[in-house]
Length: 279
Image (tube, rainbow, N blue to C red; front, side, top):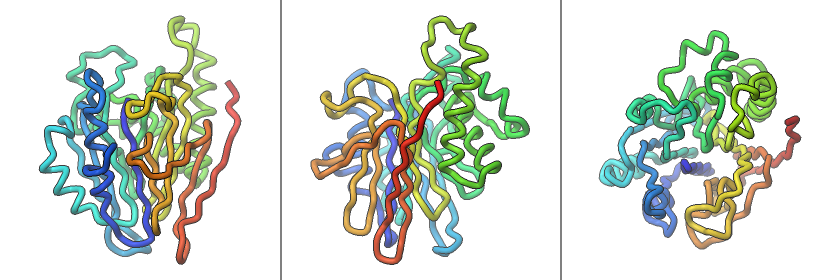
């Protein structure tokens, strides 16, 4: 039950309101459901500098976000940018390893490489098998987080295709292909993942994939299915989140769907693409 947040703006802006102050801000979501606190780490990534070649800065912590409000306040004000990605973590553990091995700076998100920032909500149920197909990208894996395996799988396909949407779809296709070859080893598992919801940025555009087959209820709204990402337009901005963060109008993603939010001269163009899954 990790939480995703992404904001893309025509003008450099902070995301302090939705990260801290709004009714269902990222901070407030971290403790909104007793017994399911998002306490396993958090992070913020944003871009700064030359608009043609912005540089990525990522700050992460393995500690509960609700115990580090002063640091969050500082980072939220500091992260004045055209693109901000944030994540709070509820650690998944598909390999059933000791919990303390999962909580660290390396396991916290967003993950990043070159100028790409990435955050994931969901669980890769067969991380070792997906890892085995990473080729030379195996050397870059630092933590014990199934989401990091997904990240390097994405980088592998990004380098192959030069397109983030194509790479996201390739991750889905490859994971199902791997599952067909190993599912007999996991009789208690029904799918190779619980969800592949993701936010990605290259410093120019903001990309999102909503794919979360779970039927559970969301944390903030029991009438809303868990994993059904949403987005809203504000003046000069597009904001994407795991679920609505205030009482304004939010539109739900379809599932599976990939969105690209791309700044133009005076507006942000949104492209939405549905795709098929060969299960």
